[in-house]
Length: 486
Length: 79
Image (tube, rainbow over all chains, first blue to last red):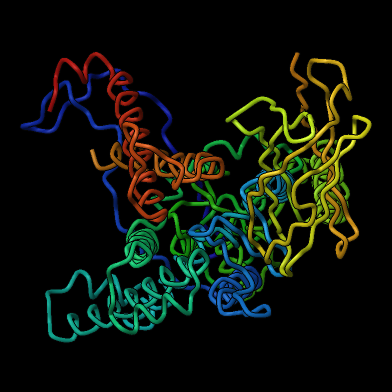
């Protein structure tokens, strides 16, 4: 390329034609599909800082996901959401359906974490931790193992079927199915003891619902990570549509530095940039090739961008090769690009009201949940009046009310509970006062309360049952009503 | 068409999962009755059935929304 060549400028025509749009021959003239036909995307593999981060997170999340069900805690699985027994075991903690509030707490924490991350640095969740991304990454890796990288896959897909093509495709499918099945099996292993489930698989005893769900989850993994891929993010994911509500002009997003890059164009390595009139973008199109959703980041921020940073990684390698500074595509904010902020200036704007409010709420919920879990009494008591009779006269002329009390022991040791009652003078527990409940079990007991004749005026009286757990050093008080007949 | 099916099936799948969580956190399948008779199904069977019933019901709602969201042109000139 000579130095005297005039600047190359691409002119994009922006005029709108007023002529009627001709439908393709044979088509219904009224019917114009607004959706582009789906083109298969062949993401090119990439290496670099953000890709390393993604792989680190893939490893981290998947070691936990695949490993956790196998971890033992005492005599049982450490983390088990036992739907059959309606008990959740999380290490030392045993949760009942009555502890639903903690699930709500976890969901609130998850939501606010997502808001916070999104406000600070855009779609971090999508790019690094979303199961859709993580499994797609793993499936792509297997695909590369069997079929090679982007160009090889494209060439092979376009070529006619040969024995080699068939063998490679079959090998890929086998690996995909194996990974999907293992994933489904692991998932169900969180809800039913995984050792039992493994036994059922080993004996090929495929009758239970657990097996059905293993296959169902495996099928979903296979479909989503093997075939749907970016379409899940583009057409199915609600978060992709509303995440922009959490964005502002100080949110870090993957951006192309248009000012520096344009006008783009190919050039010889020896050419002098200042005289060519070209920007830094060499228009190698690698950023488009690596994109898992098949967009061109140079067109600005688009809702399809999952913020994975693959284009940053690949552009940095190109910039290194041509000897330009890195960061033509980089994490930056709208304000930073506009006002040419330095990295420090950009980072200083992270702490803004939106971020502080999200962090504040998140902090409060986390602390509240931690305190509530620490103070949680590991047993529960329900008091129900006996439906048979309101009140009756027992031996000695005493007035008797009968209650049914359920005691749930959420600890992992057998507990002895002592029952007493207060609220009326001389009111006594006439039945067994000591109740023993085995670990993680519950028990209904009938309790008879007796009051001496004329011990209280006729009517209903509020009383309190007090249940002491001696070993736990805790007690629970439950309100009830004692009825004295006229 | 394929896309429309995705739009119906996926959000309703998510909402079915939410419903499953909410409903069965409160309802114990063993305490359910069917026309006065206790249901003779295992908890897993009720959970599974429940999930698909929720999925189906929410899908129908989604499909009806898609139907009503069609433009007059799409209604007047069906494929």
